[in-house]
Image 1 (cartoon, one colour):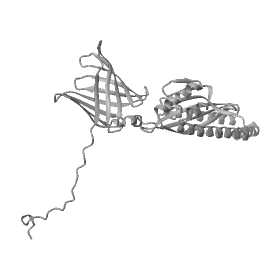
Image 2 (cartoon, rainbow, N blue to C red):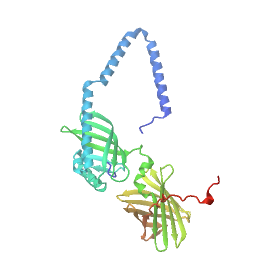
Image 3 (cartoon, one colour):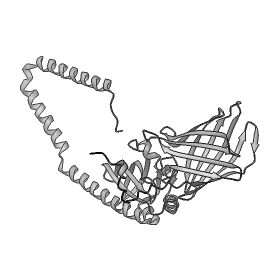
Image 4 (cartoon, rainbow, N blue to C red):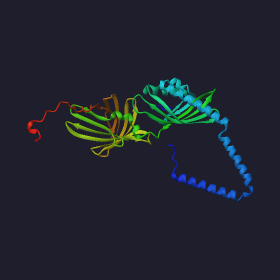
Amino acid sequence: MCSFTMRGLAAPIAFLLLLGVVRGLQGQDMSRQLGSEKTDEAPIEKQGQAQSARVVKAVTDPAKTAASSEVEKAIRAFEETFVRDYNKGDSKAIAGHFTEDAEVVDIEGQVYQGREVIEQGFVEMFAEDQGAKISLEIFSIRSLSPDVAQENGRSIVTPKEGAPRSRLYSIVYVKRNGRWLVSSVRDDPDPMVSPHDRLMDLEWMIGEWVDEGEDSLVRLNCRWSDDENYLLRSFTVQHKGEPVLSVSQRIGWDPIARQIRSWEFDSAGGFGEGWWTRDGERWVVKHSGVQPEGKTASGTNTMTRERSDLVRWTSTDRVIGDQIIPDGLSYTLVRVPPAPASVSTDRPTSPPSVNTRSPR
């Protein structure tokens, strides 16, 4: 719910079968027990009725049901206020919903302790993601005690640009002076988000791009894979009209690392991989690889989206083997506009000449 970077459990079939067997054996044992104690049939029946009555009472206890209903009503009202404050970008109002010593653990595992730290986190998030809106899907609200409740659900943050971000969350509330406040929040990845949706923030790369220098030409093409779970990019580099290098790259979501990653292979026999991190309008890619002769290589590639049709690409911190390579490698990639559609004229066709008319 409060991410600042901002399955259901399927029981194995074997476990279900085992559970069924256990239940069957329990029923069989109970039947044997009842069969061996027929002389006490009436007392057992009364005892069973009494037990059933107690179970029904526990499930439908009006006092507990009313208390749970009041807690759920209060928590849902709380969430309506939270969503309103979030969508207004009011970090101070949001922080007021937390206890002084509240703790927030975001999807990256970053811990924010204390109301002031949490407020500052929201300030930074709203500055970076202005106009973002949040919606909540509440799965469950449980009353753990008269003054403690737990909520589980899904939050969906929709930025002004880019794909919505979905998270699972778990919140613990405490009641202080008659008011429910957030004591702790934990965000987790949403397994329902597809690999395609994870990459939507990079969809702007799709298309043809070019960087043309005095004696060099770099062309880049980006498209979705056929299954649309990866972005595929190809690079070609020419020097004085001659091709010198081509690179193929596959970009995807790593569910274990919880990060966008890429894998590259070049025409000279080298290969590498990258770890992608978004920083506002920049994407920072920590890259490492192996050159054809066996030397290791690493560097930091940064893509800055200055306009929808212009991207500045720079490479820094480059190391090949034991040698540090000076910074300075940079490209300015410009989007190639789509080819104009063929224009069809509505001119009337000339009548066929006498020589082309069909004979009668």
